[in-house]
Amino acid sequence: MGNNAIIKDNKKQCRLCLEWKDTNLFGTFLDKKTNKIYINSRCKQCASNVSNKWGKDNRPMLSERWKQEKQEYLIKIRNAYGNKCNCCGETNPLFLTIDHINNDGYKIRPRNKNGYAQAEFSGSYYKRIIRADFPKDLQLLCWNCNCGKNRNNGICPHNQ
Image (cartoon, rainbow, N blue to C red; front, side, top):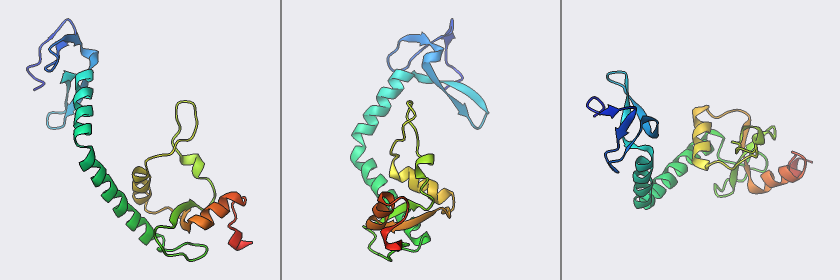
């Protein structure tokens, strides 16, 4: 694979488009067995095209897998945080949300290049909660309590 790649004048031929391109237009990978870094056989543009096509062709299967993983993560999270709203006791899982007890969730939210907070894919957020061993600064609240808390300076109206 990487051992017999021909590189001439810092250029390499892509195995898909067959164009000779600068080696910096190719990705690299680490062979874990030999601990050597190799240049990919496809240029970044061709690799991206192949990846995009694969994603489009497999979107229904991927979407279903992501939905299933997300549900599994949610079940673990709900179990870890008691399966009920920490304020009013609501137990219907369709109403339960994750709340930052100290109202500081915006601090950990990913930022775009302009510095604005972005919504992150919930599956990755759920994974992070599980990996962090269910942080103590999170809790389950139902939508009503969560929204009430948001609109009432961090205090659920039930607690006034």
